[in-house]
Image 1 (tube, rainbow, N blue to C red):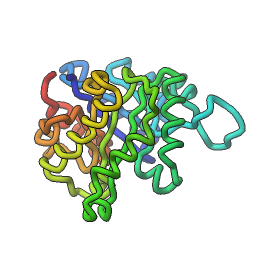
Image 2: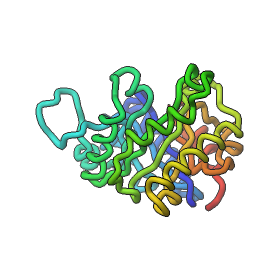
Image 3: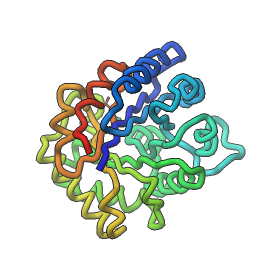
Image 4: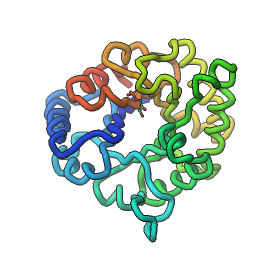
Length: 248
Ligand code: 13P
């Protein structure tokens, strides 16, 4: 399966940073990647980024509202992301769950909105450090997966991102064996829920992925790509991670 290397810029980036996307476009045009590439900049940059990257890679949002439009001050709908040039949206990121109290049910509603608009939903799950220490990593991930991914999921436009909360922005990563254990468990859950369709879903790993550790992480069984935060902000770093993806 072709891997997906996705960058989550979080609340970073102004128009001055479009130069990083332009650099990415030039590099990828000259050396076509062996993986699918996606950048999720702040929503304000999606439209100018779309104009700047000439279709060389894909763009996504970092969240969306469940409704298509309406009196929801400050929110952005999946349809608006699509209109701006996005083809995907990150949903249920642990920062959204933590700072905005997003529940699994809210994430599931947003996933339906993404599919309604024709976007790929990248649904994030992952345990906190306390939950891992308590031996609950697998059950927490399974619970979030069941609650956040609707029964009638559009499998062709779904990816899962396993992001252990304690590994995000900390420089700490799980061992390869731990990543393999969680990704294997997620795969088994997807297979039991969606049958053969669950075999083709990409399960991304996220949390302190960088040019130094990407090659090892991307070769772990059932890892179908990466969701990269800090190391996606600079084209030079992100290109090294893209290059580290094993060929399909
Ligand atoms: P870092 O790569 O900065 O740890 O962030 C990971 C993340 O949260 C991506 O969604």
